[in-house]
Length: 297
Length: 337
Image (cartoon, rainbow over all chains, first blue to last red; front, top):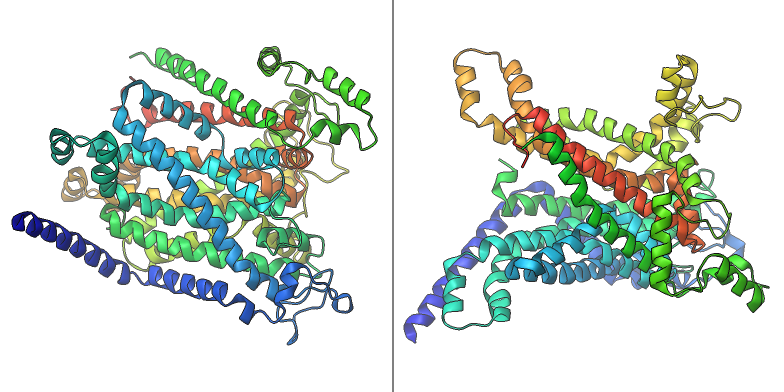
């Protein structure tokens, strides 16, 4: 009993040592630290949005007819749009939404993809064939095209956009998880677990998947920015969030007719999207180096 | 294994996937909770008119029958008809597809021409300034929403500086070259019409450049990684030892070894950019599949969307097969099997 506890402690401390080494390598990567700082800034903006935004009610569509299409000024830092809403307030209030959209898409896609990939890799045989053929179907068409089709079919709106994008985003996770499971399945500890009578579900979730976490987390991070971009693209097309939701892509679409004379309407939401995506890409780039030493030598 | 047999086998393997894709798009089109018929027939349409609509488009039949009808149509070249314009989808695709193909190909070429050298330089100056600059720049540009950057570039380069046209493939007064391929650059060259060639090149440049940014980062990254790996092979040390100039080693031996992985990424990017073109086209008024797709999806017109999805699926599969064939040409060690 005491011995097994010691073993467990040992394993845990080894795991911590790995994490600590990884953290050190991540910290020594200045670009990724910059990305992390940017993301923390974005999180703070999202949390304190109602305090930061001078006119938080503008996010809900309050209009100000007397101040239509005003250029940036001390009163309206990013100017106002066609019905006099403060762009700065709307960009700030939209930050949380963009984070939520990315989180929901990535979590849904990971859940679907990891489950399918794990079952496929573990079971093998006809089930593996079937699941991988289904995955292939989704990979034959560029994600954006299917996302447009599914979102259109489900109906305009931010929730349907998120569902639509998640439904085309999982195949990457499925492929990745399957390849990880395929190699882990042959490890002696899996055989040992099977030998002492562990069930399939227990082997998959307690023994195999915990060892496959790192690559999956990197993919979640690198994909986050692109998920936000895709959602913004659908908003821009007009399929995503509907007015007056302060969704950045939809705001760019809104300002398109006024570009470039009233350039501020579309410019600032675009910069906000860029900041969000850039921060995630920097972090993802650093994580990839930490967890896959081969990628950066 | 014989290469011809290999290609045939690859094509045979693609068919079930494409049938699956058709089932998928068909299911998407039929779960529409909205009422496309009501939308198309107009707000004042009576139940009889809608019924006539449904009968005309075969929407009153059971789903499996509808699917079989659609599939037999596909093979006969009848890809359905738009609920709105009443035009045959196949004809629309024939008109719009070359524009998107030209734009996407140009973007892939630009991304390759910029990305591969950037990756080579990164690998040669590993972890030194040029490497860091290339890395930051590629992440910087890939993070922009393409449709937004398109708007900015359009304003700067076309409106303010007047260096490039605002949009479209050709000015209204210039008639397009007689269609052989539908790609204006190739058609005009074939007819030795240099003027039209240059005009369409100028129209193409900015949209293609913006679109190419999406692919730049991944092409640079993979080129760098595989170059670094190849540079550490024994043959490089041997070649340096016998005094072959470094430049020759890099471009003649290392790059060739590194290109295999790069080509996979380039071909994947072809598919992604083809989708990204949808967004760029709406900004530059580029008469391709993008504008067509956006219009159709906003009005729940599903025949065109299904047509586009299947066309994209076919093109992507063909590109993948071509990529595998190119592998064999680049690397004779690869056996088809």
